Structures are given as C-alpha cells and as structure tokens.
Length: 460
Image (cartoon, rainbow, N blue to C red; front, side):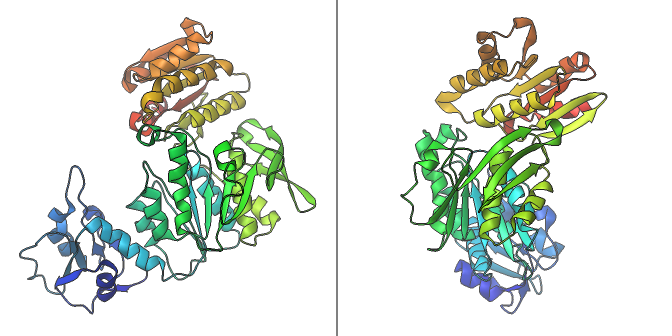
C-alpha cells in the first residue's frame, strides 16, 4: 500500500480527528489486532463474538500510527504521536477508504462472480494476465465486504492490472463490492444453487450476480458462460459489450474436442480468428474448460497473444482444498473440501471417475448447506449422480448426507456399498480400516462441515 495521509482518511470517511496530528501518514490497513504492523491504521470491526474497539489501545501500543473508532474513547490522548479518528461506522469506513484508494489507480480490473468456480476462474485469469502484466489478485477467501477492501488496499504503483473475486450470500452485497472495485471487465461463471436458501430462487441469484455490472464504466465488457441458460437469456439486453463462452454452437468462444487425461488434466480446442488452437489444463475436470475459456476471453481483450494465454493456462494450479490430488500410502485422496453445491458435487464426482483408472472409488460426501427447502431434492439428486457414475462406495456424513445415501440407494447402489455417519470422527475411524492400496477417495462437503478433518485423518 502506498502511504495515505490522515487528511485523506478523514476526507474518505467524513470522520473527525479526536486527537493526534493531521500530518501523519499510514502505510497499511489492519482489522485484526493480532496482525497490526508499524505505521498502519487499525480499523476495529464489531463482530458477533468480538468488538475490535477493545483492542484500540493495544494496537496503538504495538505500533499502529492511528485508529478509527465509532465509540467514545478515553485515555488514549496521552499516547504521543498517535491519532484517533471518529467515524459513524468503522466497517463502512473501511469500504469508504478502499473506494477512495481504488480511485488513485487507473488500471484495468477484472471482477469475477458466480455460483461455482469463482476462485478457479480468478486464478486461471491471473495466470494468463501474469504473462504480460504485474497483477494484484484476491488471495484466499478475501472476497467479501471486509476481504475485498483489504485486497484493494494492497495495490501498489507498479501493478498494471488486478483480478478480484466477489462473493455474496444476499442481494446488495456484490453491488457494494463492485462500487469499491470499479471493474472494467466483469465475469460471471454461472448461476447455480449456492445461497438459494436466502435468495429463494435462481432468478434472484441471477439478479444478485448481475449487480457486478453496477461498477462497470460505459465501455466495460461483460464475459458470460453461454452454456448457462439464465446468463444466455441476457443476450441482447445488456448495454455493455458482451462475450459468451462455452461448448454450444454460436458462442463467441467455443471449446470442442474436449478430452480428459486422468490426473494429467484436460485438453480442448478453440478457434481464434481463422486458426485452431489446442489448450491443455494441467488439472483434471472438464468443468475447468469453462474457467479456461473465461481466461482466454479476458486475455484476448487485454491484448495478450493466444500463445501466451495458452502458456498461462498451462501454468495453473488449484487453490488449497479445491480438487487437490494427493498420494498417500498407495491410495489417492482428492481433497475438495472447501465448499459444495449440487453442481460442484457433480464436477468432483466426474473427476473421481476420470482419474481413478479402473481402481476402487470411494466418495466421502457431506451436507451441502444453505439449500433451504431445496435441500432434500438436491441431496437426493447428488446420490443419484453417484450411482450414475458407478462409484464403488459412498460414505456420507451429516443429516443431509443421509439423503445423498437415500438417493444412491434409490438409484440402485447396493446397500452394502453405502455407509452413513453423523460426525467426521466416525468417518475417520471407519476409513482407517476400510481404505485399501490403489483406492481413489473423494472428500467433499460445504465449508461448515469441515471435511478437511477427514482428509487430514487419512494423511495421519
């Protein structure tokens, strides 16, 4: 982060200097009192289980140059050289500062949202843009109302482009994020079932995802998955230049001759201009073809040669707990424990089948959360998909996991091949004596299920 003066902080937040010197500057933003650094601005956030205001004095003593507050503070004026600025709402102030800071950088920014594949698409686009530009990208899960502003504040003068992921659980959230980030390119990966419990319908999910366009300039570009019927239904109705990608005929970018190569990845062909090109994605899963097509569309728009784009895609590697394949004691663990939805469950089961090379397959699946009234149907549907892929054994955990088992049994999997448990520890104990050399084991469930505990148990 480049240095900001306290005058700029006050201007951005419409705050009031309680004490300290206006001439001071800050060189970073911190919302976690445990990670405060010398010369930074501490922004205390009120959470469900904590209030950062309790740590203002501690952070100033640790080296923070200044702090925001939305409460009256006492006894801090004796700390020489430190400053405190009072604002109406510290969380809103974080967004205000990030919005002010973003306006200091005239660089192209790619904003990415969607129900499934946001992180993988973000990382693949970053791999492509890095072939030509020095870029900033979202790290980890910093894609919400706290994480995105903090990411924006990491911009430096030598950055030439940025790739930011935007998550949401309800209407209005992406609207807030996009007005901070101000993307010049907006990518929507798909409209799925994630967060349908809160939003009520896929049409409302579409509406929430479309909020990303509120931050676009008039000459911005929108890149959409043309195989998604809801997104393709927008064709001709958007005021922005729009690029559709997918596998169907008539799209702007079409993948064809898609082939799976087991653990070696996936390849496909695409036509650019009058030439055909072969693209290799170094990770399994045909769903990654969509991520690659989005990256190609962004790269071409940013003036990167197709040869460099293909090189960038070939350098991609998945984030932690996202279809990570690890060998251990003669068996393979496919750790996809980061999150789950019906669509991503099916993609992960495809990978399990495609990579197993005839070996015994075990799907360890947990609850998909935030499904609301669709939960039963969604989980039963996943169970039926397990049966359709001829997975050898199904192990479920959680209350809705039993509905996955029910769907699999209903679809014809023998009862002796289906096992259901209530807790992760029970699954770990079962797998300890069940897994054999040569097995391929998929582990997947929603974030709240903490399925990585099962993966760690297999690795012990």
